[in-house]
Image 1 (tube, rainbow, N blue to C red):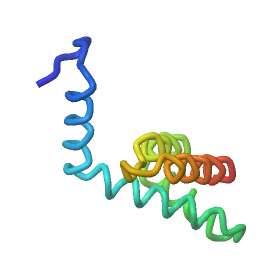
Image 2 (cartoon, helix red, strand yellow):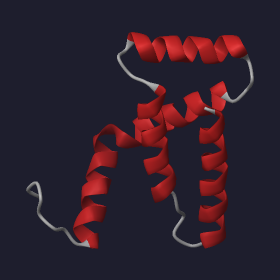
Image 3 (cartoon, rainbow, N blue to C red):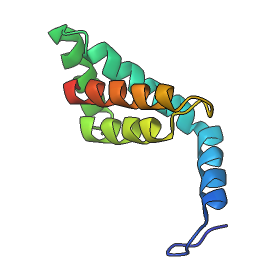
Length: 98
């Protein structure tokens, strides 16, 4: 267990992130990513409805962007740094339009 203010090493940080993924973060990241993709379709009614639903649920675009940014920071197949860089760039462009 990590206490607030405690310095953790990279292994502990990775383990903590993996636990969060297992606890539902991965599904949340995918839902947020899909919402951003849908909103980028340039169909005003879809974007308006997504924003309405976020507002009804007490959420915001800012929260969704934060979740997607964390997803982009950790995306990697572990083998191909070019893939990671291109995906991060694509997601950053997607966030600009969201």
